[in-house]
Image 1 (tube, rainbow over the protein chains, first blue to last red):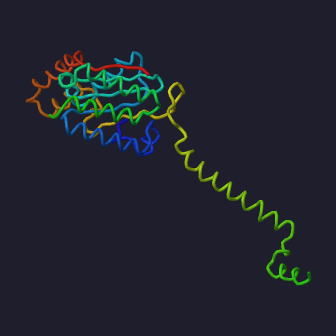
Image 2: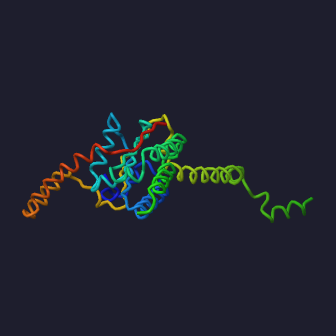
Length: 130
Length: 115
């Protein structure tokens, strides 16, 4: 399910093009390194209710408290940003909502990769340096 | 008149039959057109799947982390059991983990949006 476990073929069957994958990878690494938090991006179907489903995914991360999960479901046209307790102190819900708005605008235009990269950059900017 | 005929003949102008003429003047352009079509569709069919809001979009779910080892496959209590088995001295400490996680689950924040 993760990029590490799946083969390259599976990742290319995902919603992103090779170029978008490279940009997302770069954005994730930059966000992780600059903030010290763990950012992660999930793209796929979310069970209803989407919020609980995204929180379950977030709980599977190694350190949920210091993790930020961006979960998007293109078919349901829905996205969730989940921040852990420690991450929430650095990224308040209002900042997360602002990033979500900006991402939803990009997704609404059909640009999944661009929206994810932009959202990661906004969240990382707001979290500041570790 | 005879000289003009022979000079044309020497240059090959009158040596083409009807079939050869058709091949050169219709077959070659057709081949070029088909070649361009082939190149265009070879490029797009690989990425013909493109997300358009409101239309069904088939893809395999993906989950990205900058370093995949940060994802625990098993839920945290299972992880605590593993450490308990390996280090009995830390058994007391490991029992605190599920409680800590249970309290943390309720304080997740973030945002939702639709498009």
